[in-house]
Each structure stands twice: as structure tokens, then as C-alpha cells.
Length: 553
Image (cartoon, rainbow, N blue to C red; front, side, top):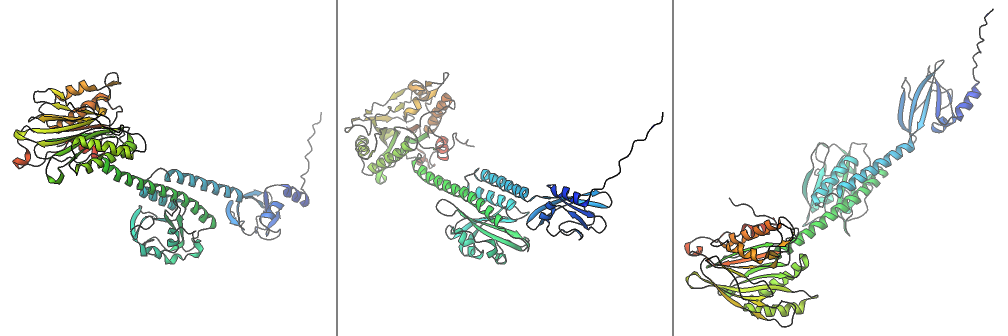
């Protein structure tokens, strides 16, 4: 049987017209070239749209590279192009081209969006003015320019600035107001005017303090206002180095959007600082006073507000020295209805009224009567006060006499030398409720070593203990006070406060105030040439805003 060899189909070379039609139908741009001389043989329709100057029979020109390069990416006629070279048979090769203009624009937009999102997150993380300015220059120098400077509005004819240069840490300083005019466009930016385009600013005019030696020649400069709350929060200066550096319109638009975020953050930080400063001034007048240490008796106080963040509340105590330099020392401890800022505001009114009444040498019971009338006339809404007012004087043989008047307040306690605890028999109606006040004053004498304690009901009503809801109560207070026999006034107050803190075990409590008057058991320090006794560490801690006292060495 004879075998047959299969027939081989002859190679068919497509006609040039057919090849051109196939290439024109392709969506991808293709340029076919001869290896020898890099002459263009054919370019399809997509390639001719991208490279109108590419003609068959002519050498391949820009942006197509010659010399055997396998790929390229370049900007050509306002478009972003990329190409890949593939070798084909018979000494030919083809460039496959792609227009990446839209994808590059999308990538730039994604990058801008990511940058602005990061800027918003970092700038909103702080309410500290300097920290916001430092964050702003860090972000601007990383994404917008080679160097960035934030200049804050002038205060007292000078401005604070924050600067970041390449390879250097963040710097801060102060500028005199005349120096602001040395930077083109800066004064207008600080005044809130729209930014002057970078192409209109001469970077050669940048002063040495803005871009010191080592930065290199400034090729482009931009000054942008930082919008704030009804007024500019400052200005942002951007600089790019090199003679060919520029800020495009897109760059300037992105910088303006970023500046709006930075300005809002700095403005919020400035507003917060102003509010904190205002609150600090108000708190300073509402916090317990520095207690005097008069001859002949000891004074010790303790105060803890229900809200530690505010450090102020409705309980208070105060001490007024002798009017005109002689006479009795006046003491007062009270509890205003409520807690927090509203109670603290009324507390301030009560203390100022008492201080004014002290100047006219009013007796304790009369002071409560006048205070009741004043509160009824000035109160916009019903608010009452309970308090104890007293006068203190030293008598013969080291004894101390107190005249006390109460307006609906817990009775003061007296710790006798033998350890017994007595209630002072003074009582009266609430202050600021009834038109007519009824007050029954009482007089107490303290022998050497004996003590009188004024306190607010936040002490006895503090809840804690084994069940977590049991009140500290009057019985425990009496027992705790009895155990303080022979102790100085400051130590007595500190011990009671610590016992209450242990009772509530870190839980919440109402405002707590205590004021102790003690007849010293020995000759007063002033008669022995000594100084004033050291105030309670808990009182010092309250003035600092700490929860616990600092340990004395």
C-alpha cells in the first residue's frame, strides 16, 4: 500500500490593503516600522489620531524612541502616552501605543482626594494652635511644595510663624509686623483677600528669613489666606525651588482647598484657646481662697467639686479678715442648689455679697437676712442656698469664740478636748426662698486643742461602702471626727476627706466642702517668731486641679 504525504498549504501573504483594514479596525494604536532606519511602514487610524505627524515612508519621530528601546512613557501634545515595542517577522517591529491621559487624570484626582482626606483627619485631631500650624506645614511641604510657612495674624504688632524646609526640622519664630510686607502677596493673604496667582509674584523678592541660604533659588512662590471664623486665621506660604519650578492652575486650586481646611482647624484651635483662657479667669475667682492664718487660731479647708473637669461647683467656703485691720474674722461655708457652672455662678454672687456686707461690720445673722433679700431680688429663677456664717475671735487663755448663724445648713460640729463631738445648736430657714428669714444664732467657745468643723451635706450624703449605695452618714462623720482628737486642723480635714474618698472608692459624689477652726494647744506661732502654718495639701491640690495632694518631703 502506497503512503501519501499530506499537502502543505502555501503561505499566503495578506495584501497591504487587507492588512491596513485589519489594523484600522483595531482599537489599539499600532505603528509598524522597519528595523533598518526606523522607517514607518504603516500606522493605523488610532495611531494617526494620537500621532498625526506619523506618515508611512518617513522615519519614526517623537514621541517614538529609536535605538532599540522596548517601551516609553511621555507627555506629547498635552496627552500622556505609553508604548510597547514588539518584533515581528522580516525585519520589522511594531509599536503598540496607549493614551493614558484619562487614567493619569483619574490617578491625580485619587491622589488629591487621599491627600485632602489625610489633611482633614490630621488637622482635626488637635485643638492646639501651634500643633495645628505644625501639622499644616508638614502636609503642605509633603504634598504641595518644597517649603511651607504658616504665618498667624499679627498680635501686638508681631506675628508667629511656623516653617518647614527640606531636610530640616520644623522651626518656629516671631516676625515684626513691618517684615510681613517683604513677602509678595503675604499682607493681602493675611487680610483675607483672594490669593494672587503665582505667575504674578516675583520669587526673587523672597526675603532671607523666609527661605534662608541652602534652600536654593526660589522658582515659584504662592501666598494663600487661611480662612477662619469671620476673619482670616493666617496665611500659608508655599515655595518651590529651581529655576523651572512653577505652580500650575491645578496646584493652586488644590492649595486653596487645603488652606481652607487648615484655616478652619487653626480658627477652631484659637477659639478653643480663648474659651479656655476665659474659663481659667472665671475659675480663678470661683475656686476656694488662700486661707489666712490669723493669730490665735488655725484655719483649714478642703473643697472637691462634683465635676473634676470644671473644678468648680455649688459648694464653697470663704474667710474674710477683720474689717479695717481689727475685729473679728468672718467665716462662711455654703451649698448652692445644683452643681456645675450655674451653681458656680450663684456661688460667686453669694461670696461677693458676703464680702460687701463684711465691710459694714454686719453680724452673722444680719448677713443672712440681707443675703436672702438680695437673692430674692436678683434671681431670674428659683435657687436657694444653705450656709453657715460666723465670726471668730481669740479670747483669754488661748480660747476661741465663734458666733455662728445657719440658714438651713447642717449644724457645725465641735470636737472637744476629751474626744466628744457636739452639734452647734444653730438653725434657720433656707436662703433665697422665703421673704422672711428666721435665724437662730449660737455661740461656741473652743478650749485649746478643740476644733469646730463646718461642712456641706455632700460629705454625709456621699454614697459607697460595701453595697456601693450607702451614705457616709452623720454617725460615721462623728466617729471620724472623734478619732482626730489632738490633731491639727489641716490634718483633721485631710483625714476626713480621705475617709470619704475611701468610702466612695472612686465613685461619683456631690460637691464637698469643709472648713475647720481650731484653737491651738500651744502658743501661737506668731508669738514664737515662727511663720504661718502650712496649708492643707488637699487645698493646694484643689487649686492646682489635682485629685490628690502632692506628698510633702
